Amino acid sequence: MHKVSFATYSASGISNQNLAARDDVSRLERRVATGDPQAADRLLELASDHDTDRGKHAMVALLSIDHAALPDDRRPRIGAVCDKAIHALADLVTTGDLGALELLLNLCADPREAPASRATNCILNLYATARLRADIRAAIGEQAGELFNALVKTDEERQRRQLSDPPRRISAEVLYLAGHHALEIQTGDAQAQSVGSALKQRLACKELQKTNPVQLLSKGRFIEDVELMSAAPESDKFDVPRDLLLLRPDGDDSIGELAGRPVPGIAFISIDNKHWVTLATCNGQDGKTDCVVFDSDYYQGHEGNERLLNQRLPGALGAKFGAMSYVGFDLQRSGAPNACGAFAALIARTLVEDYEGNVISAEGIERTFRNRGSEWAALAKDAPADLVALVAVQRASMLTQARDVDWSHVVPGVASGGSRSPAQEQE
Image (cartoon, rainbow, N blue to C red; front, side):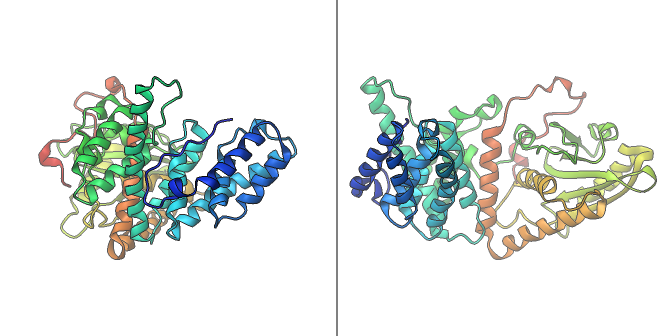
């Protein structure tokens, strides 16, 4: 059995002041590991009382124990409770329970993938929740940073004592939120530098490892091509290739490749290496291909991308071209600069997951784009901090999932779509 080791870091004091509750649960964990059915029943009983410290620790224990060691007749019940436990902790956090938050964050640093992944997804969903109290969102970032600092010290002590137990590291996505928070409060440059440096070491993409640590966390950093490619959703309705199209005004690009792609499909287009849009294609009338474009940086006086696509898509598809619809929203000027890549990925996922109906049509795609875009536009107007948080979570996921790409297949004249010069850094 693996026992969760809690790092002492937060102002809530649950790790410091409630050792008795934690120790009681730890003793039950050890008994469960021996197959003691009474201990398993007692853990279930404690976990049902979410408002007590023992109940919170029991929920974490259920999420952490090796289910193979459980008595056969208890395993289904405990498995069902585990599914509820993570959501119960999240519900407590939304009420301002910082003790529950601390437990969740500690689970994000669990050496085993399953509990760490569950807790990480829970934290990311919490952070991006619309209308979440500002103090709770700030607490997630702050406590994630404090946990990172505590684990750094713990690892230094582990190495000094030459201990063989594996190091505990906060999950990379939550680490990003800690750095994002440090930059948001504008007094955490040193913390952001430390977090960013640690995050760089966790990235699988060598291209992104070259980025300045603080810039890596900046909400204004342009999302690179390798990040967007990693975010291409899996779909059984749409063809979603893990590559990109480049569109340039001078015609030295790859937009012509669109003609050879299966329909219906989803494509990410880099417009002149400055802006990402999402293109969805579907079968139209008379065997034609209809196109629907989603643009997250569209407002009066900023319609050049629409004009360019109107000019170039008919030539790219040739005789197959049917019609084009353009769905644009002004989403980036409310505090989410250079977030076009995040919105491009989010709207693609929305189309894959939320498209209604069995027949894919331009009208259905446009409706899906407008419905989700309108939700984001409402946040941009009434709750911009919520939109910034949504983008931060998407950035965290894309950054940590990105992998190196072999660009040898790219046609001449087409650069890796997201490279930026300093002059291009603002859309």
